[in-house]
Length: 382
Ligand code: FAD
Image 1 (tube, rainbow, N blue to C red):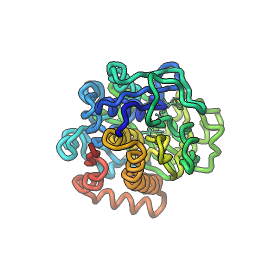
Image 2 (image 1 turned 135 degrees about the vertical axis):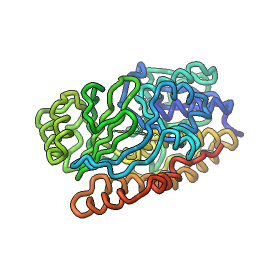
Image 3 (image 1 turned 60 degrees about the vertical axis):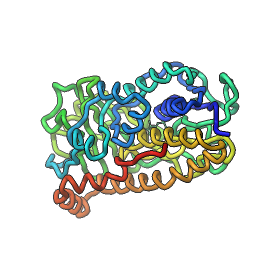
C-alpha cells in the first residue's frame, strides 16, 4: 500500500518542499519544527534550474520569480587582478537551455514562500516549537513514514544504523552584506561573481529584497571549528583579513571596512545509510550535507523531496525508501565530486592556479554551460 500520511521532522527547505510534494500526490503530513517561529536564517541562495523546475511543479515559482533576481551570468574572476576569467551565461540563456530559470534570493524569501504554500494546503499541518528528541511527536494521525529533514545535526539519523555523521570540512564561511551605494566597481547587479584566490574564494551577488549584495567568503586552513560561530573575536577577524591581504586592494579594503561579518564553520555529512529499510528516511542536509562549492545543497534537498514523494505515492513504504536511496545516491556522489573539484580549482595556488586561469580563459561560454547540463538539466522522476 502506498503511504497516506507522513511525519516530517524539520521545516527547512527540504521539509517544506517534501510536505508540498506529498500533498501534490494526495498524501497528508505533520511537519514538526523545533523553532518556535521560522525566523531569518542564513543569507543568500542561488537557485539553479534543476531546483526551479521542481518549484514550478509545486506551484510556487511564479511567486519566487516576482521576488528574486535572475543574473545574466555567473562570472569567475581572479581575486588578485579582478580580471574576468570566464562567464557562464544565465538569464534568458538558462531558461532556454535548461528549460527553467536561475535565480538569486534571500533564503528567508524561499522559506516564506514555501511556508505560505504549506499553510494554505489542507493536507499539511505545521507544528512549530516541537523538537524531536527520541520519540516521534504526536501528530494528527499515525504516520506510515518518518522523513528526517532536520539538517546537518539530524536527530532522525539515530533511528538508522550506519547513518551519515557530521564532519568538519576544515573550511569556514564568513558572510556579510554590502549596501548598493557602497558596492565597489567590480560588483555588478546583473551577475553572480565568484572571486578566486589561493585557499579562499568569495561569492557575491545582488539581492532584490535588500537592494544590496550578499557576500560569502570561504577560507580553508588549520582552523578548529568550535570557536568559530556567530560574531568573531578581533583575533579571528585579523586572521581572516590576513588571508585576503594579497588579494586585490579593493577586496582587502572591503573586509577591513566591515564589522558585521558572521562566521559559519562548514560541516559535511560522511557517506552512510539514508533509510532503515522500514519507515524512516533522511533527505537534504540530514542525508548528505555538502560543501557549498557547487551551490547545490538546497537544490538537492528540493530534488530529494520531490522524488521521495513520487516513490512514496506509488509503492509500499519500505520499497519506496530503498528505491529513493538507490536512485539518489549516484547523483549526490557525483555532485560531491564536482564540489571537491571546484574546491580544488577555486582555491588553487602557484602553477595550478596559472593553469586554471588559462584553461578557464580559453573555454567558450557554450562549453562552460555544457559542463553543467547534467546538474541544471536534470528532470526528476515523477
Ligand atoms: P536545514 O535548512 O538545515 O533545515 C533543517 C530544519 O530542521 C531547521 O528548520 C531546523 O530548525 C529543524 N530541526 C533540526 N533539528 C530538529 C529537531 N530535532 N526537531 C525538529 N526540528 C529540527 N544551497 C543551494 O542550493 N544554493 C546556494 O547558493 C547555497 N549556498 C550556501 C552557502 C553557504 C555558506 C552554506 C553554508 C550553504 C549553502 N547552500 C546552498 C546549502 C543550503 O543552505 C542547505 O543545503 C539547505 O538549506 C539544506 O536544507 P535542509 O532543509 O536539508 O536543512
